[in-house]
Every structure is written in C-alpha cells, then in structure tokens.
Image (cartoon, rainbow, N blue to C red):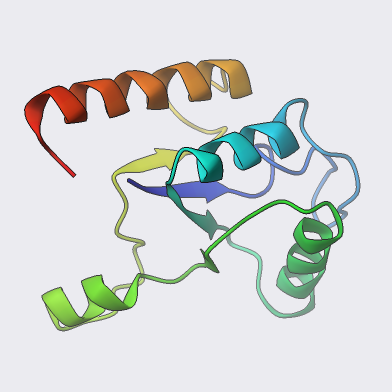
Amino acid sequence: MILAIDFDGVLNASRFPSVGIAVSGAVDGMKALKAMGHTLIIWTCREGQDQTNAINWLLERGIPFDGINCNLRSNIERYNNDSRKINAHLYIDDKCIGGWQGWNAVLRYVEQLDERNEQLGVD
C-alpha cells in the first residue's frame, strides 16, 4: 500500500518549526511499515528550509521514506497529472477524526488492512 504519513505530530513531536524529538514509536513504526513492503510518502505542509530540516532529521534517524509530498511516477502516468493531493491508500495524520491513537494502533490497523487485502486479492 501507499501510505501518506504526516510529519509534525506523527513523526516529529517538537513544536513547528523545530525538529528534534521523535514521537514515541515513530522510528520503529516507520521501519516496520517499510519492512512490511509499504511505500512511505512523507506528507507535510513544510517547504523550503523547514522541509529540508525535516528531510535531514529523517535521514539522521534512519527513518525510511520513498518521497516527500510527491505522487508515485506510476500514478502520475496513470492519471496523467501530478495532483497536489498525494494519492495514497491510507493517510496517517495526528489531526484525524478521533485523534492520534499512536504508532501501535497504526501498525495494528495496517496489518488488518494487509490481511483483508490479501484475502480479497487486492494490491
């Protein structure tokens, strides 16, 4: 699955524009999602130097990601556009309805989706 993961509040616990403190479970959670074979797109409102700081922070911690605020080339070609909205199967954001449940809840939910998709034969 393609997962769009918010940066501030999901990965970075520091108050914007700072970076430094990782949300509890974020590093291991991202590594687990990547090990499960998912495509990880960082989905953030940061731009310019603030985005560069976020990228460096991810790299320094060994947090895997496949892109930042970008659609996969295959989706750009399929839909003949590069929409500003990231095309993803799941959006992981601390501003979701019900509030941020933490990385354990994210991993459980993704595992359930993977099992369901496997049973249905869905990619």
